Length: 448
Image (tube, rainbow, N blue to C red):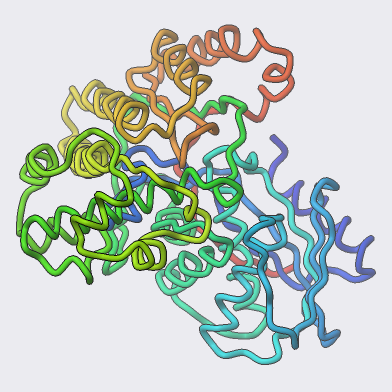
């Protein structure tokens, strides 16, 4: 991959050709790989990601044109211009690249009540493969938030920026939990992070010596905002929360996240897993059964529990989803404890946790796909001690933990067994299979 300095020079040239001036500053926000803790941030539970070296980079000049002009170095992403004095509209039904950028702009505008916004010209470039589960869309939102803050001469802490960008990405319709934006801002080179929510905080997690993490893309793209899979899971967890709360005599009307039920009951994660088995049946739940159990009308069900793109869903899996969340939340804490212990068995233990996580994502949360399962299987046969899907799933990437001395063999074996057997994958292999080290968080740097 070209160096970041080279990319910046190329981007500067593109910027000057397009706008006839030099950029004033650059903003950069990294993608991430989640090592463990899938689909649990929006349930209120901690996750354990690290930033990757691939990022979104924006070159920016500030002017009094009264417009925000957006261009992308990739010609498949079209230019877009919006007036600084208009209300920024984001089309959820059509999640184009510039709408993600505008989510970040709108988040900062609303935080400070800026009217009108400063005029900006921007050229955006990125090295994160899109729709791959490495958080290219959240990195774009974070980059745009950072750009808008700087262009309008405002100042915020990284924590505040992470919280604003997590909220404003919901304008595009994805009901995420905040992991992607938090690690994009709070990452530090050389360490993974345990990210906890309410309040948001990040703790260093030292990964064991003697193993590296390898990312492999199964080459099936998944755009969270363009499909309803992701939000259906959010809704199923929300309904499971209400059902568990109701049975335990809690006020279910104010509880939305599975973690809140555990907190209210002062229970352990093991207790919660037992409660799920006791209270929720594995068979599908109909709308009628849920309404009856919660004492709500079908109208309330639609407006209070469903999101815009899940109104069509008639049946829900609650037992399996809650079981995944409470089990995965426990695995995150075990993963951190193993890293902290620095035991000589760390690599094997972490690998086991990653494998359990993938099985849970595949069987209970049903967010894998045949290609990802095949890729994970190949990774384990090629020498990984642990391998799992990372990101939302339904496509995208696997992350594998590989003993350092086996990395070269591993990459060659995966290349031959997964990529070279298919011409489309073979063409994508260069940017689809790579070692990743924990990278740093989002930054602004001035044009020298």
